[in-house]
Length: 293
Image (tube, rainbow, N blue to C red):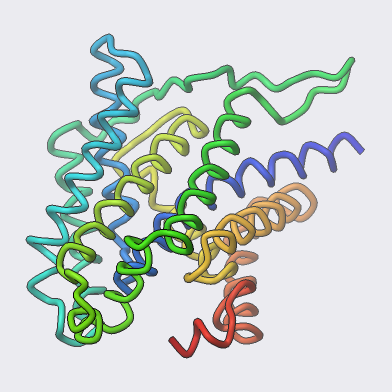
């Protein structure tokens, strides 16, 4: 029984980490219709900037604020200087550019911060709660991670459903010419979409670093795959779907790791991705209207 409870809690925690990254993918997809494969590397470099400040004596919260600001600037710069020149061409061009950007940013991290593994101290205790003699795989830091992910999900849902800026971002993503005719400044909306997605990605990078406790320039690589599977599982158009997809994926992989074997976790993620694409290609939270849009 204790193993089942801890595997469930562990799955929820890992799923929240996947959901944090999936939210960044969903945000940039909804605002630009591009899958950003460089999101993990962009999150990693802002995390290393924050880590340098923390190691220099600043608090975690100062590092977090600087990481989010750095992500905002980085996302806007990438959109204006790297993505904007290939917009309007074949959709595959932008995807290939993000893959190249992923490699370039990882190389830049290695040059600026080195390739060695570095410790990352979580803002709250990572020691699990205890109920009598029963040790839980749930700590104050994981509660902070869960709360941050839920707040981001609610914020993104409100942004796209209830604000004019969110509607303008969606219009710019679906039909740029029509959006321009309606008075939407498409260029600014695309830049804003990349900037906000980079902010969410930076937050995800900080949350993930606090959970894994050690970071390297490639520490986000595995999570890119699982975050992408979580986003596809829930539906690339749905912030709620990203969170639910992340939690379901985290639970499924936790049970596979605990009851079957750690070596089959990657295979299980692949099977889940293939089944979802075959049975419900738009994801669990997709609708007919959003697929047609």
